[in-house]
Image 1: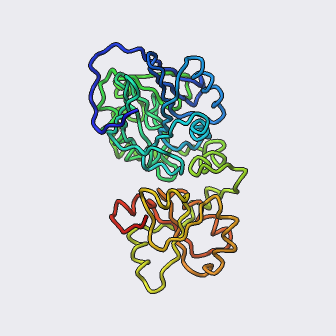
Image 2 (image 1 turned 60 degrees about the vertical axis):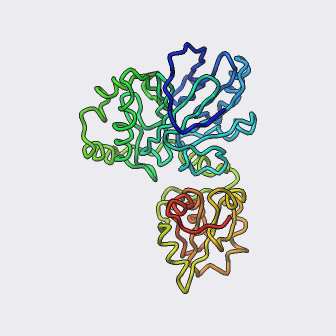
Image 3 (image 1 turned 120 degrees about the vertical axis):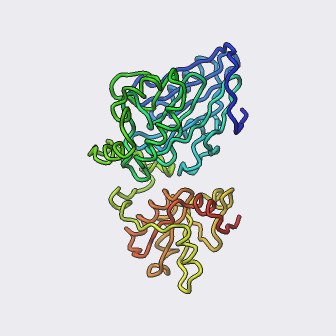
Length: 362
């Protein structure tokens, strides 16, 4: 598999491509494969269907080359990590994805080439900060950004209805009208639509201004998805619910946020905070590096190690850090539940710290 930054349109060559939706359910998982060369990509796998995917691959004689997540799901467990462990195929998600075991972080416009077909990554945030769509010649897989005659909700942490409107109208609606639309969810029995159809008849977007769309989406009043507590944080952390008692959404929402610039200011103050990095060890020394003096305690070890190792800092300010500022919110809420009253989260994590060109060590 090759990676390339620019997009080169297809030259009209007839291809033996396999394209299937594998779940036949409300949650969609897609298989794209080269029938002639036997290599495949699976997009948005479900944890409970991993054995089915392995069976489909074996039936068609396909080798799994890549697993792509269009975003961090809140309503079901992702099977990406388990499928990767069983097949050796890397997991790819946008660089804003919070999970620790993503081996390939994607950028807007990046091209994924598998044998004789290619996928262009379109960064389409709004439903979540890490949402992407995948454009493959005559079709686009839109994740939860654009649904068939609907759009994904934008009221989860990190969601932004204005960004979602821009993603739909500036990125997806810029594709040819004939482009087939395949979303990650459908609740009405639809299988596909087209960009042209969604432009003219999607009731949430068609003829609606950005301001009107934001007003609509901010007042939907939708209930939380069933099982969100069992899906969202495990998908963000790759830690099973049985291995950790995760904080509630209310506890997560109460965590105080601090920008990277604010953290940098506090580091230079007389009463500097304790910097607590909760990533995995390979991330701590990896491409994003770490802040000088940051203490490493991986999130999965934090409940057991906090009492013994952090007790001397119970009255001190603690700033919790991770890759994208998501796992660290979970860690901060856990510490608050253990009686640490001066805990805050570094918003945007080491991604935003690096983007601000603040100093790192590796």
